[in-house]
Length: 171
Length: 214
Image (cartoon, rainbow over all chains, first blue to last red; front, side, top):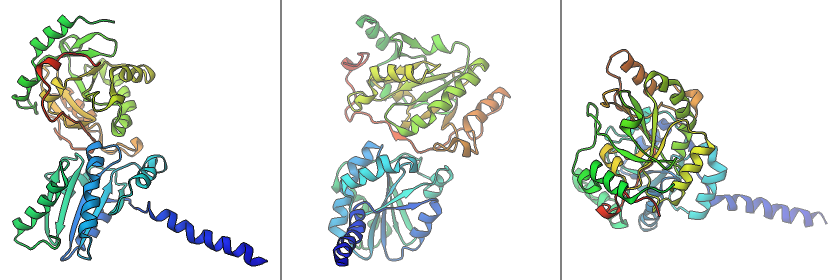
């Protein structure tokens, strides 16, 4: 008789994490957490896109990062979608958005709210989103503004590797 | 309130069209701002010379759809109450194209100004003529002009959009205080995260200049 209770309970315990899987994201309280993470990238390409649910050009280019992820995901290539949404609208806006859009790359909510990090990310950056950062060892470059097409995003990565004289690990 | 099309035609003639504006460099620190006129939420045209004759002004490019802009709404109301009597009133301009963001149309602007009891004018720049001259790329964005209408500070209000009680640097207030002491503000430009102001890919034709929404 007891098994009648135990089985649904087990099923429930198994289902909950699976239901949450589609909306998993990390919260970084400080920009330094992101910096530390980027500093660890060795022989490893990281594409960091800064976006927000309320930034329309950002939302429009998100599918390009999905495509990039689907085409090239590998141990030496990762994409981080760093959102500047507010923690205060997490439940109301951010989580439903993630559920709806089904973003493939890793999502991070950056809760850093000072402005010093804007300069630390890149002195050329003026704080306008979207902005996309490429990191490969000590090499970095940024693309300010949105990509007009998926091809433009690939070209941006391609020219980055040409400029630093390395072979792109993804194409 | 009906506004004569002739008035719009004249105002676009006097204050420049989008095409002319695009060929001019955007204002930066030290530039003197030219007069402009836009429609206020009360339906009347308001010019900078009507509003800030012989005084400074805090021009803010803002909008309804941007949460960052909303966070600063109450702060701007308080700043206006504090600094208007000292010669630095707030002038809010919404540069959003209603065709791209219907929630920012003129009716919504009127509603917003009424509901939140804006003590300052709220102008619609539906053709982005003024926006192009200033070169603002995000909301909210502040341009502090002195009494000669010279741009003295560009940037954000303070360093903590989300939590006002954690503010450490009051850039705008510090800049006003510097001007009052007859000094140059430092910093003169600050950067902040905001919502991009979208511009149409093809510049607006001259025909569309000066026409209200709808």
